[in-house]
Amino acid sequence: MADAVLWRALVSATERSLASGALAPIATELEVVEDGEVAFAVRLFARLDIKERANREQRRVGTNPFLPPDPDLFVTELTPTHVALLNKFTVFPHHLLIVTRRFVSQDRLLDLADFEALAIVMAEIDGLGFYNAGVVAGASQPHRHLQVVPTPLGPDDLSTPMDTLMKSAPERVPAPVPGLDLPHVALRLDGRPINRSDGPALHECYHALLAAIGISDRRQPYNLLLTRHWMLLVPRARECWEGTSVNALGFAGSLLVRDREQLARLREIGPMRVLSAVSGAHLSP
Image 1 (cartoon, rainbow, N blue to C red):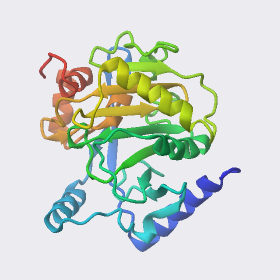
Image 2 (image 1 turned 90 degrees about the vertical axis):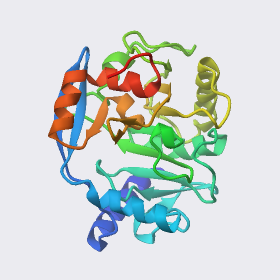
Image 3 (image 1 turned 135 degrees about the horizontal axis):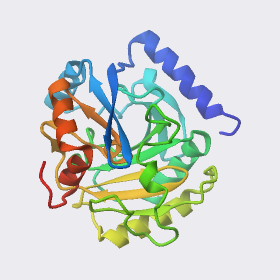
């Protein structure tokens, strides 16, 4: 899928799904909340009720939106095991889902095939790849799906707001990042564009992070984040902060709040304390 074929398919699918109404972008207002060295990109929902109603209806009827996938949200075939779909209720333009063709539980450990599909996408799209391992980690669907959003995530030139800390991520051996005061391990990559063939190397890094933090089975929720420069793994203790779900994007420095009252509360507490609380650190907002 060289020569921007995937990107053209993504743009075409976005235009088609907007025209048909299959894609339902969620409008937000962007605010910056500084906490130490990190300028968090905080998005305030203009309207969240559409997604909440859809999630309630899906839970009521027990449907799987990925089997079969909505043809209007289909982007392309990736591998014999994975396809690329648009995220229906998206906050970020061109938010891509990497979905298994057959049902695989979202709380199981990722395998080589997942990373082979992820490498294909990130070889072409310079973005943030992430995985929410289970409901406690912020997953809204039980069917295995990784996600990629193009960067930058905030208003400046950084790939993610968390890059101010992640530039100090350790090389080669997984270890905590100085200044990131919550349970985690990270690893700095070489910063070159990811190649389509890098799936095995990324899979190996993932297992090194799992081993370093002591995660060995599906009962332990976590968030995995990946850019061309670093990989980060954060264990999770709870899904929500004051009623709002926090997923992997929060640990990249991108948070969502429901209203201005919650935004004021976030400014009061500080985003890092929120991340510490949901990751299981002995801090309470």
